[in-house]
Image 1 (cartoon, rainbow, N blue to C red):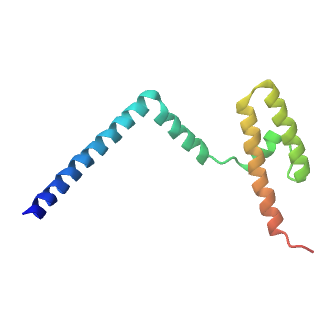
Image 2 (image 1 turned 120 degrees about the horizontal axis):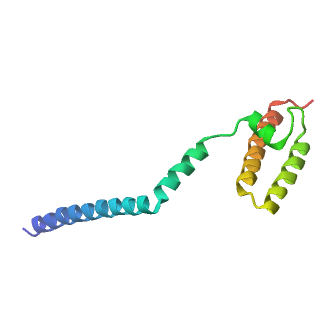
Image 3 (image 1 turned 30 degrees about the vertical axis):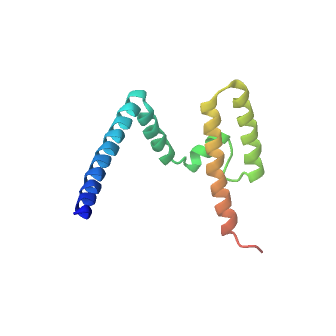
Length: 116
């Protein structure tokens, strides 16, 4: 008899707890959509999935395919500092993304070339 009562309490309690968690989740989503947090998060996810292409990165930094990594770093440092002084965070982030893109390409090329 006691086991039956305990089992009923556990089942009822878990049902109540489950509904409360679900209701809290729905309320959190509603609050996030009102404040714009959900939309901002989705925009950040979409932005993160867009990887910069190599030609765009080279154009932003003003380097050619034959430029050395040291030249790329000089251009990056110069443009990054200029945009830091003038306060253009958007351009500064584009310069940073361009450097990241080219860095991955230069690293891949360095690993692909055999040492002679």
